[in-house]
Length: 193
Image 1 (tube, helix red, strand yellow):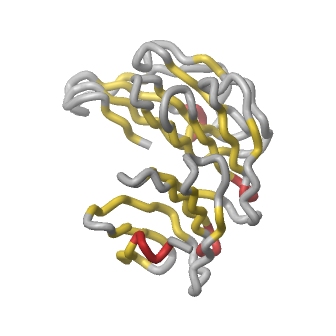
Image 2 (image 1 turned 135 degrees about the vertical axis):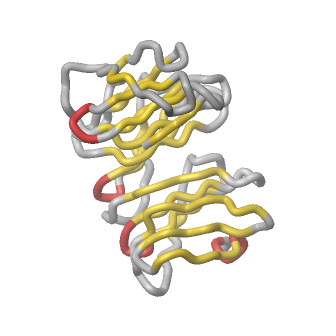
């Protein structure tokens, strides 16, 4: 994953604990490992208050409270790989990954609650729309939808059952989805019950 705080300062993360920093818009990168572990680092996201959350394999979750200068490993509710984080309001954050596992924390990752997803498909990406609806995508055409701030989710499997790797809010009530089918637009309203 790649994440930038502003036009100049950013991070790139990846396999075997790879963590790189740039302060010149990506012209040069410096290796800056954050742990002695070599777990794959999967996804990096920022909360509204500036906390950074990182999902990794083997159930590892990191948080930075100082803009990525230092990282703390959080207690984990699961030993399998996480592929995404989705910070919500205040100290609430979701993490998700293998076998349909989805967890919610309301204390910035200090404790976690499992959320029923109704699937064992790998969960790949997530976002919150302007109206507050939360969408999490997955393999097998799985789309999870929450209208209560991420406390519960309804499963909306897509008819073609093709895996979705990325979901983006394209604006004007449209979702851009990327997956085994290529790239397609979907009206967000089609996910409503």
